[in-house]
Image (tube, helix red, strand yellow):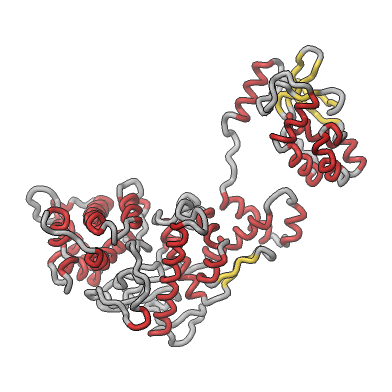
Amino acid sequence: MRSWQELEVDVLDDVILDPRNVRLVQERETPQPLIINDLFKNAKALELVQAIAQLGYLTHEVPVVLQRGDALVVVEGNRRLAALKAIQNPYLVPSYASSIKKHADTISEDDRESLRTIRVKVAPGQVEADQLIAALHTSNPRVPWGPDRQAAFFEAQVEAGRTLDELLALYPTVQVRKFVIRASALRLFKSVPYLNESLRKALNDDRKVKVSILERLYEYEKFQNLAGIRVSNRTAVAEIVGTKRRFYAVAEKVVGDIVGKRLNTRVLNRQDSETYTEYMAELEDFVRSLDHQEGAGGSGGTGTNGSGGSGASGNPSATGSSSGGQTNFSAAGSNSGSDNTGVASESGGGSGSISGATSNRRISKKLDTTGLVTPAAMATSAIPNLLLEISQLNIETFPNATFDLMRTLLEKTIKMYADVLGVNIRSEVTVRGHVMLDNCLEWLEKKARADGATAIAGVIKKVKTGQLADYVATSDHLNAINHNPLVSATPSEVRTAWNSAKPILEWMLKS
């Protein structure tokens, strides 16, 4: 286009709208009055009038014209020309005249006069004009900003000292309030001292944590109440109003569910959808268990972060450990010994849950996979898909399918873990024939002990040798469920086995 002639033209007298414009709903060779009406009715030309009135006429893109007979026809920029014509004479579009006039009257007389004349490029011919139109409208030369980059732009504005009112005035055609809220909410989630470092990193990668998923949660008042936060539409600020301990724990669970692909915009499609309602019920159970734990053993004062002092590590969202008889509860929601009621329990052999007031709480029909995040090294393997599938199966309806998939997930994760480490399991342990689950567990136990992870090694040994109080968690039973036609699984057995398998999976995926 560098060699194309550039002209200055009068928008009313020198150029006409293109009757062959593909935007038009009208037939070709339509009269000019019908074309401009069509562009206002079907191509949102009125929005462009409003934008020009508020921001001025942007000249970074120049309309392109073509000589057809005696007429100079705009072949690229018809909406702009229609808007400019209407600003000069609102009655060119009778059905929109009052709205056009309202916006046009906000433009000063001098500015309105200056909009009468614009610069255009002249295409040498129809072929060249079509090449340009195709490049602009049938390909994507400009990559749009993602939600996180949009938020980052306005976050930078706020950090530079701009107030919300200033931003609203500076960007009248932009959803400023929404973007500033998004930036504030993201900053809140990024402030969490995540137990799982990969979650913190994932928040800075919109391929792993899509802001649109978080947005469907933090905009919901019920979620705000559960998480102990307030997101104000008036001030465009997201802030913690409850204890930091609660928000940190909820954030770790939610971000873990997003990274683990358990939570997406389909699950949170509508606030009244079944999947959204189920997830909110799960969060309610999770928060209840937090409150119960704090009341039962974590009420020893409030730490510097406004949290209960029960965490084993001192981290406000850290509690217990994955084995060894300690209370097995993590901020990521891995209630390994709770039978998924959301109530902390003893995990040493662990199928018993805390009784009393919690005994009649709703038991989740799905396995709790929070905290199970596939590392980048395994991202292209089958592990992410297996985790997603097992998180969605209804235990009550499909106990055998869930049990079978659990065994598959455990074996394949161990093999993938060994593969990432460059280890050949067959050469590490005595194997006759194919490498089976028993062989995988034998190697993994040795690996855990060599790494000094004696607690997790004990869990692996119990699964491998049957020293757990419940036989259902042993590899023998896992194999029997898979191969023996006389053996079937019950939902209770699935939960008990998962309580033992999950800590092993967590250890491998976090290593």
